[in-house]
Length: 166
Image (cartoon, rainbow, N blue to C red; front, side, top):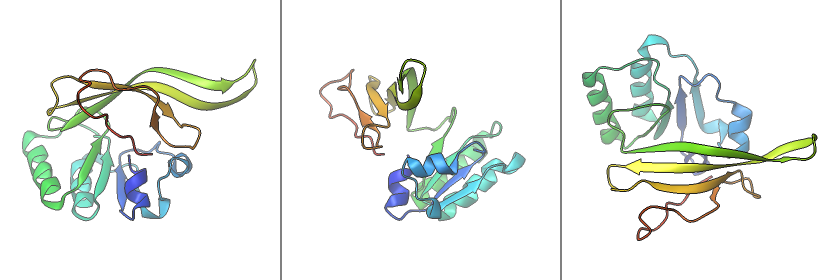
C-alpha cells in the first residue's frame, strides 16, 4: 500500500515493523529512497507515529500496545489536519476501513522442485461507508509483478470494484 505513493514521490514511514523486508518491499514497488524505517520505537510508539504523521503523507504502524482514547483522538486529529494516511497492522478503533486476507493458495512449485511464484488469496474490505463487505480474489504478484483482482467483487455488485494499486 506504500508502493504507489512512494513511486509518485511521497515519503512513507513504517513504525514497529522490524520484519519489514526492504528488498521485498522494493520488489513490490516501494521506492526505498522515500521510505523511513523505525523498526522498534519502544513504548512511545504512538508519539513516534504522530511525529512521522506531521511530515510524511503515509505512515504504517504496528501498535506496540494499547493507546488511550485521548492519544487516539489526538493522533486522529493530527492525521486529518495533515492529510496523512495511517495504515495499521492490527485493530484500530477509529479505522475508516479494514482489510482481511483469507484462503491463501501458493503456486509455482512443480513436482518437488521450482520456485513459489504467486500467491492467491481472498481480500475482504469492510468500511463504515458500506453496508456489505466487499471481497475479491487477488494475485500477489500477477504476471507483471503487480497486485490484481482475479475475480469480480462479491457482495454489493451495484458498486464499482475497488482498484488495487501495486
